[in-house]
Image 1: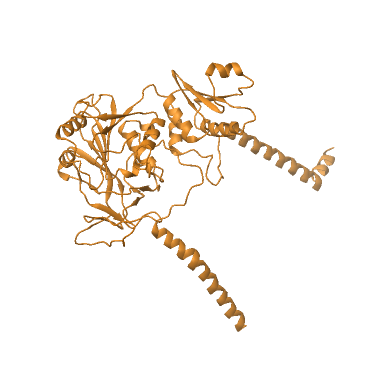
Image 2: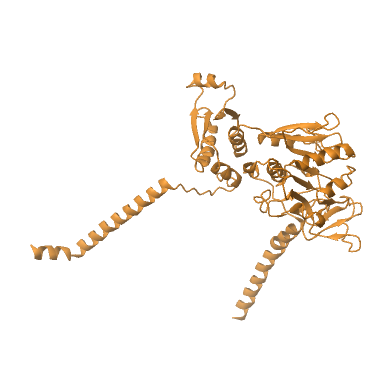
Length: 461
């Protein structure tokens, strides 16, 4: 029997069979371990061209810090393609948070539930959390993220825009208006209102942020006193001041350590087809407001430089937020338009860049234990947030981040998700020239020289 077993075990077929069995067992074990790990640790890869299945970092952060349970009820037909869009989007959200639950309801199969929620529009999603409820009608990350913000908070912050000095009007839908910004802020969950200090002698205590956007007429001394009192008691002020503004805020700004003048910033780093007065910024300071902007471009179409008074360093902390390129400069002369020749840097009159275009000052000490830290954010341009330019690359992100930080909505600081649709390639003039040299001259020239070298080598053989 022993000899028979020995003979059987030494056969080549037996060894091969045992090896095959061992390989199968090992592969089964490995697959079992991988399946177990995949069930416990979900990993997703997104190979789509526009990364449509990858959530923006701001959305991922919101989901990680979601304060409470949120139920999403999607009312859509089982055969509707929108159902798949909602499912894919919400699955991406649920991969980041276990506090999100979802239920799909076909209105035709469950008309009672549909009537209970008062659904009159197809493809509607209802979000519920605590006593809050909100609805969206499109399966987009922008809409769903903003809805999560609104429904997970019981308190709405109020943003007041000052009027009476020829500012950008909130309700104006023209290129110069701020209606797009108003809509964007409301989608973020803010209450947005106008405020005239002529009609109201006090600034409401519930004002989370006060905005003075592009005043072209003087701000009276009495109004400036109210602004100073508001900031001194822990207020948060956002100032957007254009070159040539006659607001007359120089002395008030100096009290906060801020200084700006009527020079215009010119920059050769512009968008393709733009002029020198439209500097494109991709250099940001280190701060929560700008931490997720990365290499996103922000354009300030008509900007003035901002600086800090060192004498106020013991009272205020200065944070530069956005800087023009090293190829920029500030000039006191009238800026050129697209019909004139570009103006060169004049070392006798102009100041070489990079130049700070937006900055934040924060009080070093609170006036009282219960007050917020006073803060003033100054941007040397107001047109970048207008309807004409708000949709440009990072302009929306920058203004929403600024308002969110001032309103102490830390989870909203980075809540403007990136656009997942195919967009226009934005190139500066230098990048456009480099691309031309590479594609039109560089690559064809290289292959031409290589072909000539091969021809000469073969001819010598």
